[in-house]
Image (cartoon, rainbow over all chains, first blue to last red):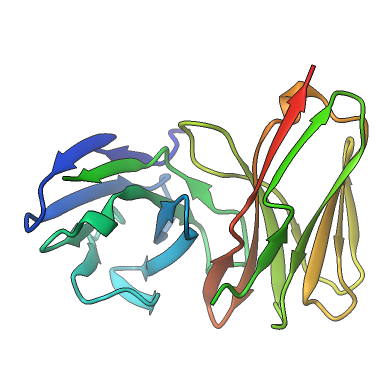
Length: 114
Length: 109
């Protein structure tokens, strides 16, 4: 059974640019959630999608957005990049809601903003 | 403001020693999970605790959920170098998952 796949694994952008990250969940999983991980702030919840609908959102500015497609694949977009957006972005898939079962994480997309 | 406070943030001990990591909050969680993350990888679930006072054992790891469901602890007996990693607790509240900042554990041979 294939795990959660995130692409790209690494990317470098400059301030003001935008970036799109992709996440393919485990087959059959309808929930995809996104997290930002930095040394200073730890792992912070961005948003969760379930059956193409955003079910919950963390405390991030509107520059951070996402969507989920009918095949459960998800993308997140960050516009007008800032230096502070440099982080490891993790997505996780699960069968049900957050906290009700196991989250399966991908290896992450490491974003560096110069 | 961090809803979940983990302590210690860093811990380096010798192989064979015991250790305890704490995860505390003023909030009540419907469930709490512990994950371990190794460099270059995403976190992997170790355990989920749901009932206040619950104790779960996973080989040399013992997890406890506080009676009030506001705190949890992870105890490792006879630590091994393979236990090295970042340990994260995560609490479910309002359909969100809130993570602690993590405890970076290093077990020296």
